[in-house]
Every structure is written in structure tokens, then in C-alpha cells.
Length: 275
Image 1 (cartoon, rainbow, N blue to C red):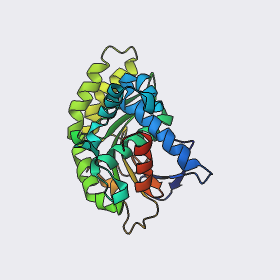
Image 2 (image 1 turned 90 degrees about the horizontal axis):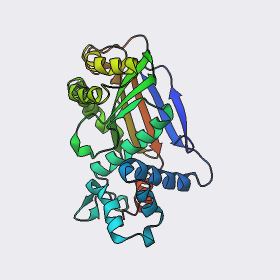
Image 3 (image 1 turned 30 degrees about the vertical axis):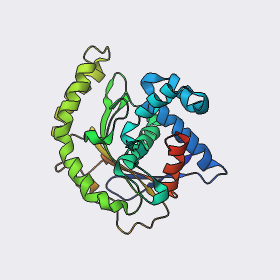
Image 4 (image 1 turned 90 degrees about the vertical axis):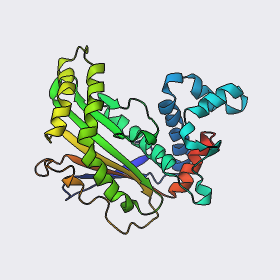
């Protein structure tokens, strides 16, 4: 995604705030839409690559059975065979916007080459767990490793309407994390990187003890043309209760400001052959 976006950091806050916007270059939006559609296929259909990429690229000549398989990977976006998100009618269903925004976060974070992300591939928002877990650092260097738990939201109008929901979710993250951490650590119990394995084994306790290796992130996608009347999660640094708020910032607010967000989603869904 870095080929299509520029970032601006906002200083003077008790957390890191970065705003991403599309580059103002000819054809940026058109190229972004196709690249985003390709990333959707690579992420949501990773177990069936490169076949599904071929189906996407040669849709008109692909077998009907293959096209049905392709669409089933994004089945949660449909109801009665119809895409639930129809921006042309001013309707943005939560499932579709959440799917779009989480996929954009995965795309943005790829450049940081994380040691591990969880879930390893995207899943429907209906599961209601931690949206994205990211472990970064250097293999073999325990001190460099950090855990970031991301909450993802999106809005066609006033994104601040999610503030209270985000705070409530972050409060729940420490307890939610235990089962997920157990799954991750078990999966890597025979890993040859002792430092990484040790970090995984300690993660749950780090989260419950509010240790600074644990970071919390919020990613929000919204329409850049809509004037935001209220601040977005101004109290982010206070959640969950007891987490360090002095010294090095341990929270991140990443915003993706999209001009005409509804139309961009429509363009991506059409490029994906979903409508």
C-alpha cells in the first residue's frame, strides 16, 4: 500500500497518531483499486493460490464452479446471493466496511515485516475476537520483540461514533488474549528461535501485567470529505486501565482517510467481481 499512500504523523499526543491518505497523482485511485483487489485475493484466498488469482484475472473465461469457490471465500459479504454493501444506495453494512478496513490494515502493516500476525489469514468480523494481533521485532532478540493488539473500525460518516465501542473492546482485550496466546505459543513450541518462543510463552502475563512491551492500536478508515465533528478516541492512552501512559507511547492510532469512501469500496467490490 505504501506505493499509493503518504503518511503524516501528528505530534504532541500521549499516543502515536499517523494519518494515511492517497497520493495526489494521476491514476492513483484506479491503480490502488486494482492493487487492493489483488491483495484481497491474496489474503482471503491464500490457501488456494495461485488458482484463485487466475480466476480473478480471467473471470470471463473461468469455470462456473471455480467462480463459485472464489466468491465463497468472501461469503460473509453476501445475503441471499446479494452483496450486503451497496454504496450506490448509501448503505454501508458493518460487515463489509469492517472487512475492507481490516484488509487495508493488513496491507499497511506488511511493510513492517512482522514475526507473526494472528489470525494468520483474515476471517469474518462475526467472530468478535481481537481484530489483529501483531508481533514485531528481530528473531533471536527478545528485548526487541513487541506485541500490538489492533481494534479496527470504519465509517461513512462520523467515525467518532465508534469511540465508546473502541474503549469497551480494548478493556476486554487482556482477557480475550489468553486463549489466543495459548494457541499461538502451542503452534510454535518446537520453534528453534528460543527468544521468540520465550516471548510467546510470556505474552499473556505481559498483557495482564500491563507491561510496556504490549501495545494497543486502533485503525479507522473513514471518508476524508466528511468533516469530523469530534475527536477520534482522545482517551486512547487510558485503555485498558493500568497501562503505562508516561514515557514511551504504547498506543497507536492509525487513520486511513479515503476521499469518497463509499465509491472506493464500490470500485473494489466491482474489481473483485462481487457485484
